[in-house]
Length: 219
Ligand code: HEC
Image (tube, rainbow, N blue to C red; front, side, top):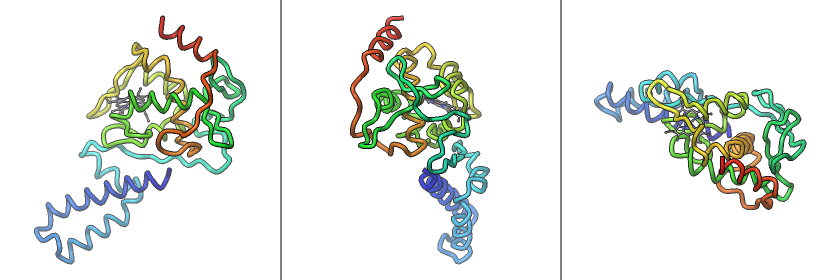
């Protein structure tokens, strides 16, 4: 996941560098222009270098989250280890929703559903697979950093950015009844437990899940 983020920064940095070069250097193929672009490309892998230049373009600052192999407690302070299932969803030791992926790659139902819901409601702004866009941040990183309740707060109430708006979804049942699923999907992808795209195999829908879903949708 770090590689993808760096790549985004690299492409963005290179694009900005070439725009800047085009404005200040009439001959794009002059040795000076090439040196300028090369130097910008060399440092653009680092977000510190790319971000200030990107601000004017409305691009979103990318902050990759480092997660070591085998690490279970995220920078958010939440442990991703699945301990018990309630309402058809896996939870950690604090009752916070988490994912469970079997050794053969079978993804728990809620997390699989989160993939679908994310791509129905969030990906237009936050990019496919939570990878981020020039408009909105990479949620696969946000969920590893943010407290679960802060995440819920932003989705429920929305947020006004500098040049952009995160809409409020608290009264949208198609989001709110499945927000835990979207959250666990993003955590599962953010930790690279599941890759990009639709998970190939999913577990059956638990009865408790259906009961909770019906109750939420009829509220
Ligand atoms: C219309 C575009 C749009 C849609 C659709 C959208 N968002 Fe956002 N979202 C944004 C923008 C823009 C921001 C950044 C706001 C800011 O600068 O504070 C944001 C920020 C967030 C944040 C805070 C991230 C952080 O790192 O601080 C969360 C969490 C979030 N969105 C979740 C979601 C979820 C979940 C969905 C789908 C249910 C969704 N968003 C759909 C535009 C959108």
